[in-house]
Image (cartoon, rainbow, N blue to C red; front, side, top):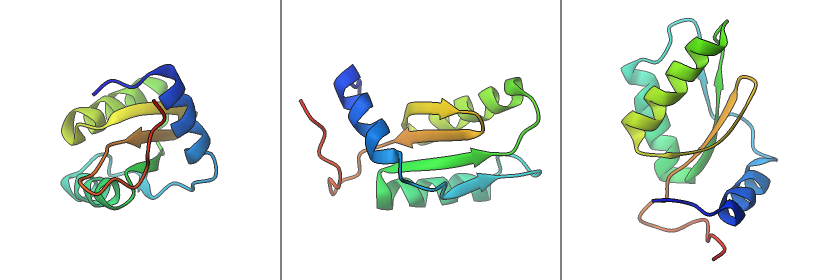
Length: 97
């Protein structure tokens, strides 16, 4: 699924008021974290994840792993906050055309 720039801007504005649902700490990206992200995506569709890693390269690798494992779309990354979107079977967010 590809999103247009208009749709990404819409999702960014929707995510602006959200707080991070999942936080990745010292243990890194584990199976338990992946399960929490999957549950959150199924319930909310649009979530923020806080990644507490020291360097940018580690954050980038974690973000890429999350996208690969969840089949979600990266919306934006600002500092340690990563926003992703994956539509669920029950559409909760209607995207503009």
